[in-house]
Length: 161
Image: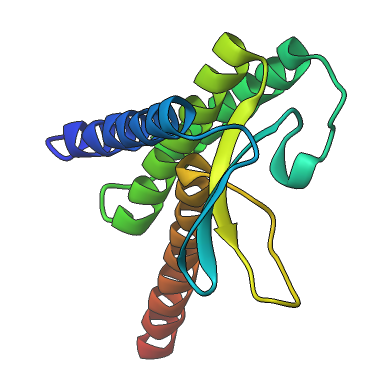
């Protein structure tokens, strides 16, 4: 129970840093402006009215917000069911919720999500995304990692018995 505040702080930190960076991007960059800082990485201010990779673009913001709330409810339900020893999963769920809240704030206040991270090469480019998206992705990887750790632990325990 003592560790739960740490996961809450991780969630709050993810939201705070995400919103701070989005504020910086919106206040200091023109829409569509690109600032290259590595040969393959740039800031590029844009918006996303859909969800990941503009999927469901064109749906009303309130529908996407309701969908985000439903998914967050499910994630919180899963998080509550984790055991204290499942540190990767708990951290992953905290990051997923933090990222979802960060994007939900944008969707509710702005009607879209602010995106700005742009990976690219001269012949290829990846979708533009933000820190909240990164938190969701890293969180999902941590949850999967926990499943692998648990599977290996259970398999080793069965082989010993």
